[in-house]
Image (tube, rainbow over all chains, first blue to last red; front, side, top):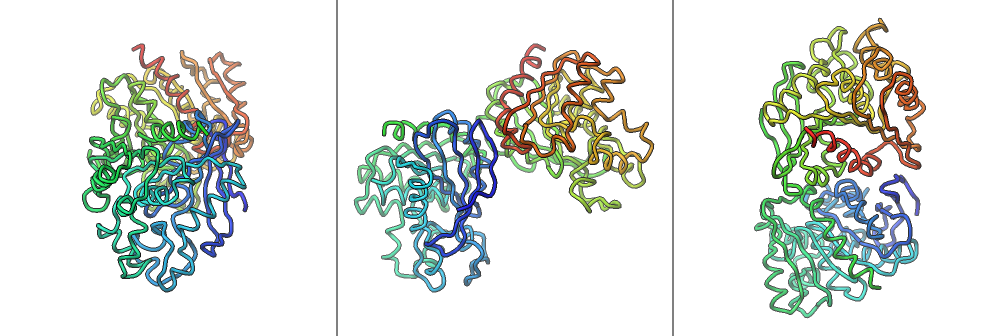
Length: 275
Length: 275
């Protein structure tokens, strides 16, 4: 693991790293912010379509609140890079920059796009071994919000708390999710539900702590791809505590994320700080 | 003047605009953040080399503090665009994205690179007429810090307060400044001093209010191009009140800017709020 860049920020350090991943068999990059002083826990952040390890750490303005709460953050890239798989670089919403955080099963992708394992096993091991943090929460934006809900609900013992910004909550019900799940998992839809937050609730997965979600009401993807009300209904039906905040006038981008990131960091801090 | 994009942020709006400039004879872009509620004044922000109207508004995390203080910000682009002048697109540190905020005199550039007039006349008119703000302060980063110091010292009645992040304080004494002043103003160095903050102090220009500067001590450009101690000495010698804060470990980029932007916004608010 090597450090590529390091920038002092709010007394701590914003850093960029690369390492050779066993899961993806590629060089993978991630960014971190490490506050000064004692670290109280780690937030694992998953970014959305087209993003890299840089978007959240550069645009969300999170460092101030991480410094104040003593939390670190780790932001992995959103897919393997440097490959040339079938259709991998054809559209912005499939392949490169669009892993959907699943372990792929389809020809070509199955050898590299093992992003679920990369996050759950490899990144979590890095948090524990390299950064010495055992208290981990998970959050993300859009496709990364899907990743946070799905990974958090599948691994409730591993992640102390879950939140999301404008997440894709029910990928098997929207064209974007169907495109990706077909591409990575194949046509057998019975293999898709294990990676769908609403389906996971239906199957009995649950997290002890409340899940926090912010969703902008001026978000153009809300009705087409995000389907936030599906998660609201599934939470009620299957007994998952969830606080879903619909916010008037906010769209899908990082100006929206930056507005509410303080609330999410403080939300996670209340759980991470107790451990 | 037309609005290109609008994003709700911390209750107000981050917006991107374009208009036809009389000074540059090109279409120019700028960004703004307008907080909700009564606006107490306007901060005019000048960005550094290679930047556009987007860098500060996207990376500095300023909106939170602007919302809290009731200030708006306007961030112009750093040069005319869409031209093809001699050497304009050859290097990152001259021409496009590198106007140095002067009114050019050299062949080709004199017809378009009238960025001093663009900022002082056109942008200030937009602030006053379009946004109805008469209380204006000025700040900037690197080349834009040079712009803020230079424009503020030349127009003390127009700008209520001045601050800068890692500014180029004495361009006629560094290779980067000499390259640009030669390119825009020609070889007659007597024409250069009117655009050099240290030379302006020497010539008797002064601002009533303290000038605030932050300078990172891990900034690789400090000794080569920024020359911050020159401004410190000139301020003392010519009686300009200045608070120059050298900060250990910080480099030249936006992670540094984001760390201290709250302090600068609150600094300007104390002057803007009084008027």
